[in-house]
Amino acid sequence: MLSQLVIRELCITSTPIAFIHEFVRRTRAAGAVTKFVLTACAATWEEVDELGEVLVRMRSTRRLLVVLLLITDNLDQVQQSDRPLWTRMNLSRCSVLKNLNLTIYIKDPAYILPLLAAYLAAVMSAPSSLRTLNIFLVALPQSYDPPFAPDFMRAFWEERDEMVVKHCPRHMMVNVDLVPMPASSAQTTEAERGVFKTFITKHCLPMSVKQGRLRVLEDSETIG
Image (cartoon, rainbow, N blue to C red):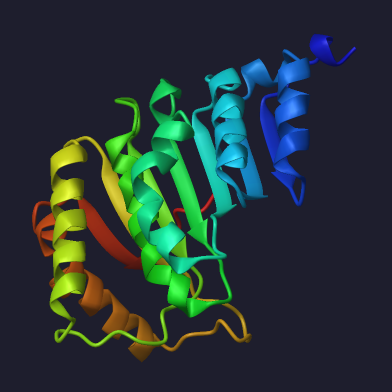
């Protein structure tokens, strides 16, 4: 019976990736999905590959909204994961995808900047159909020292800045959105968001901003 269903919008949360993979593999219904909302934790590269197979089977998806908790048991793994991540997730094969929303929702602030870098790397595998890449931050790092970042950090962000400029076409916009949260441990002040915005636009990704490839927004209406 599942194969006779036509699913246009699919929202999956708190579900093991293996189950999602098996569901999509066994039914043709997911092949017509145009909006896919996914909250998942990829704890292993095997799960990343399974997500890649899911996206291939859902190539009709035009809007992909993902809260993807990457491999976070080792900070070095997160910092090194941006290169193969989107290739192994088959993002480039989502040939009609227009909007990709990625949310960084994580308790440990040490992972926020590495995850931001990993999410920005999606531009390297983005299909030509993609128009907007929205990256939502619901918390901010607790420590960064602009403009006195160590040389290795400066080189790290210069590489990412060049990556966005090189791989983000004129018809595509990258939005880094600082999402204010209700009263919680993740709540940030307007001043804190302003400092972070300056840090990103002036010291991390200045070329991307200057050439109109990337914007840092506050409380925008891009979610949905």
